[in-house]
Length: 129
Image 1 (cartoon, rainbow, N blue to C red):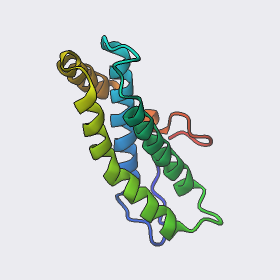
Image 2: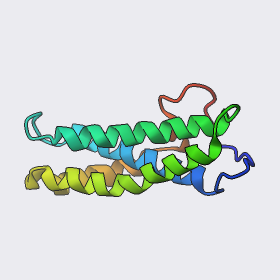
Image 3: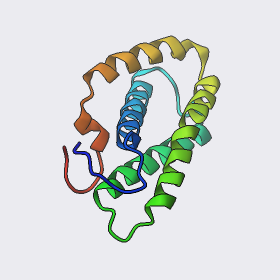
Image 4: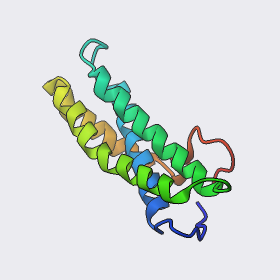
């Protein structure tokens, strides 16, 4: 995606958000491919991870639509979300049945190689790179 020069926004923020969204998408798609029932799925952690993904999507939208936004607050909140993702992801994986962890990791790795930059902008209204 194009890089805007926004005052107070770290230059690496967009790249970090795009990468996080791609990794989350690979995980979500990988979870769809493994043999895990709804009862075995750690719903609380999955919901948290989806909320953090939504935070990333919202931040990507905001970077292209900054008018009227408190960018300093948006950056602070977004960086907090980015820092929480690994912890919540680890909690989710720890609660999955052990039998699905290796297949899930394999699916994730394969899926991640097929994702494009445009996939990071999935479900974000407006322009696509």
